[in-house]
Image (cartoon, rainbow, N blue to C red; front, side):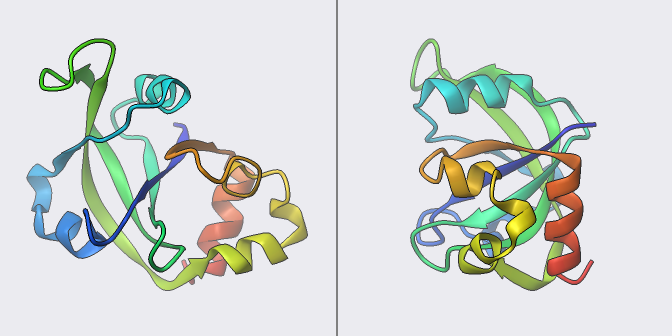
Length: 136
């Protein structure tokens, strides 16, 4: 199983809205960056994903799971894709970008090195560290 991080501005789609979508989840749209698209296409059903509030909050707030692998985003047209996610659990203590940057073992994490990328891979080691920082 791979791990990932997806970003959303809370004023556009928040963690609370993701939770409210329930077990049926929701599709992830708005991604029109080729690197992010390739990351979406690499996701597999069951992969665990950090949900990150960008621009407002700047923190990892929860974990979602891939429930449907990539499929065409009809409204946007080729080559763009959607992936469906459902909320799994919140982080008891959200992990801020400042805290990630302050942790030396996370210096090479995409959240630090490719800050603007909206869909990012997360290594197993990074996943474990963020989970621990978030109280899991």
